[in-house]
Every structure is written in C-alpha cells, then in structure tokens.
Length: 540
Ligand code: NAD
Image 1 (cartoon, rainbow, N blue to C red):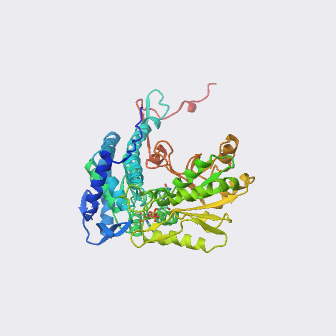
Image 2: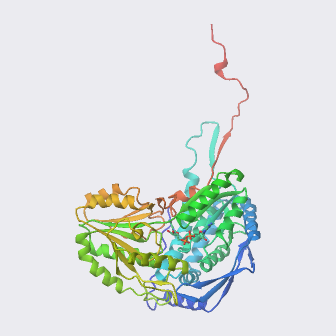
Image 3: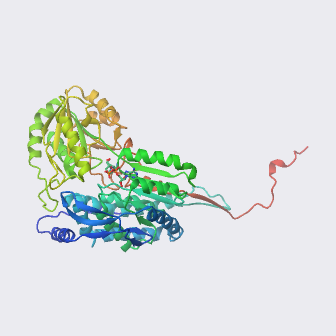
C-alpha cells in the first residue's frame, strides 16, 4: 500500500504569495475580537462565562472572548460523545478516513493561513514555527493516521482459518468516550489528540489549553467543515480539573489522551485509579509529558554543527518545545573553541513581534510561564556554581519576553541542569575531555526525564558507546543533530520514564491504544453431536 508524503514546508520568502497571504490573515485576525463558544453535539454553546485570549508578545491585545463550559456543558459533552459512537462506528473506517483526509486537504489549502496566523498570534510562534507545527505536522498526522489505520485491518487479521471455519478480527474502538487534554505549545498535537482516536471509531471530549483557544477553535471549525459529524469531538474550553471530575463520574469514560506536564499527568493517572470501581472498562491512559533534553558532545565532534544545534535546539519557539535542548555536556576543548562564537551568535538573535519576520524568537506563553522561567534564571544568577554567560534579561511590560539565556554550571545536578524549565534557557556543564564515559552515566542518571537527546561525535565507536549508554535516556535519539524537530512518519515521537507512556504520536503504535478488537469465529460446519472420539470404549 503506497503511503502519503510529508507535507512540504512553505518558505515565506519576501514577496512570496504565501507571505502576502499570511500578512493579510494576521491583519484580519488582529482587527477583530471573536467569540469562541463550546461546541457540543455540533452546536455552538455560548455560556456567558468568559475569559480572554491575548497575544503573548503584546498582551494588551485581546483576540477573543472564550465561553467556558460549566458542569452542565461538560456533562452534555460526555452524553453527546456516547450517543454519537454507534453511528460513527457504523459509517466504517473508510468514511472516517475520508473526513480526516478532507481535513488535511483543507488545511493544506484554503485554511492554511488562517490556522498559521492564529497560531502565530495565540501562541506567539514565528511564521516558520507555525508552519511546521499547525500546518505541516497536523496535515501529516491526519494523512498518516488514516494510512496506519487502514493497515491494521489487514495486519491484525488472524493467520489461520482451517477448513469449515472463517476467523476474523473486528477492529473495534474502545467502548465509551475518550477525554483529550491538550497542551498550548503545538496546535498540531492539540488537534491530533482528539482526532487520532476518532479515526479508529472513538468519540470524545477535547479540552484545549487555556492558552490556545483561538487556534484550537479554528481547527475545530475546520474539522466540522470537513464533515465531522455532530458529537464525535466535543470542544470544551474550561477547567481541566472539573472536566476530569465530570468525565470520571461517567461510567463510559474509556480513555485519556494527554499531552502536557508530568505533574498534571501523574495527578490524572491517580484520579483515574481511584475512579476505577465506577467505570465500565479499564481505561487506556496515554500521556506524553515533560522533558529535560540533552546534547552530549565528544571532543571529536563537528564544532560548528554543535553550535548550530545548540542554538536552534534550545531557542526556537523560545524553548517551549518538550524536545528543546536544555542541558548540554560539552568537553573542555570544544567549549574553549565554540563558547565565544556561540555567545556572539545568540547576541544576534532578534526577538519581538511574530508579525515581524526578521525575528527568530517571540514571547513565552503567559505570565505564569514568564514568572517561572525568570525565577529559574534569577536563582541561577544567585548561585556560586552558576554563571550566566549570555542573556538572563526578561521584560513583561509589553509581552512576555525572556532573552535566550545560557547558564554555565560547575554542578551537573544544579537545578537548571535537571528540572524542566520550558523556556529559552540552556545550561551547560563543561567536562574534562577524558571523562566521556563518566558524562554518559551522568546524563543518564541526572534527570527523571527521558524524552529526547543528541550525541555529537564524528567517530562511530563513540557514537555507539553513547547509543548504548543512553538507551533508556531518550525515546527520540539524535546523532549529530539537534534533539528537536521530529517529523510524523519519520521519527515517531515520545519518551519514557517521567516523560510519558511512549506511545509514539505520529506512528501506528498510538492508534493501537484506541482499539479493542473483537475476535470472530464463524463455523460453516456446526457440530451436530456432542460426544468426542476419545469417549469410545477400547476394542477388546
Ligand atoms: P500543562 O500540564 O500545564 O497543561 C496541559 C493541559 O492539562 C492543559 O489543557 C491544561 O489546562 C490541563 N490541566 C492542567 N491542570 C490540570 C488538572 N489539574 N486536571 C486536568 N487537566 C489539567 O502543560 P502546558 O503548559 O500546556 O504544556 C507544556 C508541557 O507539555 C511541558 O511539560 C511539555 O514538556 C509538555 N509537552 C510534552 C510533549 C510530548 O510529546 N512529550 C509535547 C508537548 C508538550
């Protein structure tokens, strides 16, 4: 079966058609304040209890008023999902795939700039970061998920059907509804979490992040335009804690599809455990969570390649990627050679409004993130073991801006070397050139996370040594490349340890979590007698 191709990334070069269209869409979205409803059973519900969405790099600018769900809407959403399931199953895989492939086509075409512009404004992404996330990655998720789901129907069929018998496997979805709780930082992940289970026949609730309501709502509208039937995905802005409570009170809760922080996911898992006696099924729990992603360099590495990987890997999208490089182990000789250049390149980074395409960075997502990240920087500045060699400044007067920051530490387990900061902060531990083996052990044991990581070396033996020593330290492992930028169908994404259940979004394994197959045996020669040959008496 031939497979889809990854969606090509538009370049947005000066004067290009796409750049002109994107400017126009940005201006349009900045000139209006829209009302965002809940969408329950295909209907817009304006609750009157609202919150605003602002532009993180210009937080005085309101983009939308969002109508938040109360318990009543949350309960209605659960009921709508349950009621929609039978029909959604019965239209069959092919019809479901046609809808999601239509979603991909709409996003690749007329909806592309609308979705990109909303991601730039709502989540403060540059044009390029919005394009690779909200357009390309989501188009890929939708197309490849359909491709993988079609594959199950053949691959999961029983190998043997003896004469007179026909064996088959029905690829049923989970019985009940799936709750998808989504993060702010990727529009693609936000839409993929509810739609991946839907491809295989699940229905559910989509609880978007409070920091990405605008882009997520536009994606919900896109799915409806593509023909998603009422009730299959119910869009419910509101309190995550309350939605979880309502869903767990409902015996039809069948699964959680989560991406976000480790702390929240651990709490949700515990709550599900407590609710178990009230539920009809054992729910599936899939969660992709935090990271403390590393770069380990060997003295024999490509130094310029390392410099570029550190800069892009740490500071693109202000370090707000679960895969962002945030700790680096660099040998003394290499650090001597690159640190001055690295600092001078970082000083060239322009930071500001996403509409100004010369900016490489914009703002972090909100006041809470700003306070948390600047707290890490300020505490490091006060520690004897840490030195801030570039950046460190922060200013939230217009937008939530934090300078790209590098901390050099002499303590490999200091706070910023082991905890997830989720901002533009890289901490570097400089090691003696002959301590590569020790540094691999340190990298493996220093942090509870195990999401992504890179090894830089030009020698195969050293690469293999790191590959083996860091087997369980990252679910996505890069050799001579930055630890970010996984592509659907190329590097299925996810990590283990405190980083998640490693169910690999962007690959077939994730979809398998949302099915509960039924094995069917059909006999054409139904036995007409009940006794067996062994029961005959022995001959004398
Ligand atoms: P977050 O944990 O703050 O929020 C994620 C979602 O959980 C949001 O929708 C939020 O409203 C909801 N939530 C928060 N508290 C809740 C509660 N008590 N009950 C129910 N729901 C609740 O994360 P975020 O700030 O949106 O995203 C950043 C985090 O996500 C980082 O830790 C990052 O590493 C992680 N992330 C991981 C991956 C991955 O694939 N591993 C991808 C993207 C982001």
